Length: 385
Image (cartoon, rainbow, N blue to C red; front, side, top):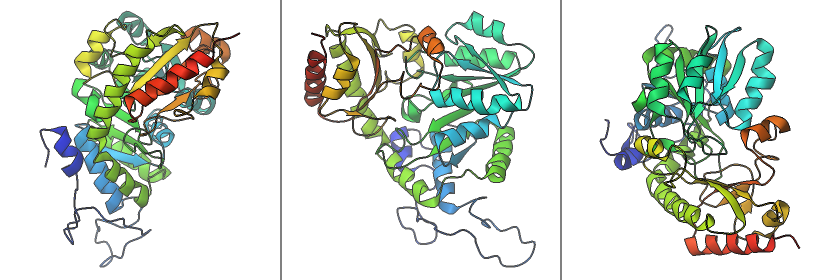
């Protein structure tokens, strides 16, 4: 059953109970294989790499939430991205947004490049530049919106229409927004990717990835790749992810309320040179973002002025944790230049705007006044003598 309201679908979507016992939670089917009634009987379940009831329940839920045809759960976000890139062949080229997750750049630059699957970096905010970059060898455009870490916005509808005019795929990494805030398939995208480790998991206690396809043809190809290469999500983490998604709506509401307030707060601090948050009205392409998303999301990036010491800022934080990742209930802060985007060459990082003084903040669900107090004291202490 498809529910009109996503708050209901988060809890009851997909397979929300055990058909055998009527338990309100799908059991964890910890089995590698399944007994069969006889030869050539085409059983529903045969081997857990091919299909597992717990993972299948998660995949049905994800497909419903993203308005897709089918979903596929993987052992990590990078495993999900890798599976999508396996749809292409040697000699093909993928266009990627100017600032994407460093792991996406790394797997294209260091792994798939060796198999002659090429990439080009394009400003996907600029429709004319994107159009010009689509040559005969280009087979897909791969975007993040808002992108990691500068939160740049790409027009989903315009990008999908442009891609389809050229006969290429439109792929979106929707990790930052989640289907609670934004659904790229509704705007014409062919594939949606998630690092489900982040907001979908939400508690910094699991690693998972997902791909949602918009068409049966892509679903069949991805099902073959998932089964053939085997980077599947295990049953227990599938169960944990279903559990976590049930609270996605209430968590995201708190995350984004805090983020909107902190973005407005940080822009007035004398230590902050520039702030990046699509929920601010003067942020580039704010209107486009708000047409395609529920709100500004829960990720903020900001650049410190030169007279403030970046290492001192991180060292003096007491509540907010310096760590990789994002999307957990706890607030996390990172230094993109040396952490999430360290795999991108320094000159390219600086060209893209990922400077040494850039901070990325994943806003958690703590009390807002405590978050403000921690940022205030850490910024004040980071002023150089």
